[in-house]
Image (cartoon, rainbow, N blue to C red; front, top):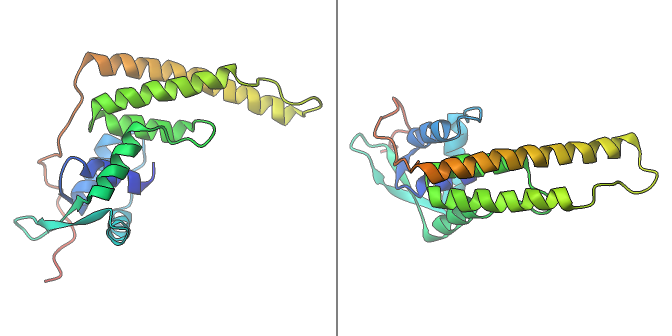
Amino acid sequence: MSVRDGLLAVLTLGPAYGLQLHSELTSRAPHRKPVNVGQIYGTLDRLIKQTLVETGGRTADALPLYRLTEAGRSKALLWMTEPAVDTLPDWAEMLDQVVLSISIDPASARTLAEEYRRRWESELVGPACPHEGAGLEARLAIAARGAQAVAAIAWLDDAIVELGRSDSFRPLSAERPRRGRRSAV
């Protein structure tokens, strides 16, 4: 998951300030190492320049709020519904997309998991043999990819079942992190 995609996804829940976004990413993607707070603010600055995010007022204690533009909302919704693959699915990106989306838009997370499952399944029925004369490296790489596909399908099956059992939506947390970017005024 890029910090950019994670921030855009969390901002679909409403305006938030920098440290709040940091806290939300940490709690919604517990499988990831926490992102440096400075990276959050740097990414927000770039997202503003790209017109995907805009300032959205201030908190009662003058922390700047950030909110999505329409273009930012479109990018976020696309990221939460479409597998991020060019050719073969990537385990880490799949995990990031599905796990983060579970608490933001469970229905989209389920659709996303189902689509990833289809793509991993196609990996199992694809060419399983390297070209004639391929070395040990090629054979081991293909075997590893097959094992990864089997593991991904098993994990996705569990995720799809769990998503069908309960509503995992969580709004932005009302708990206030202790610090944040202060107003320049």
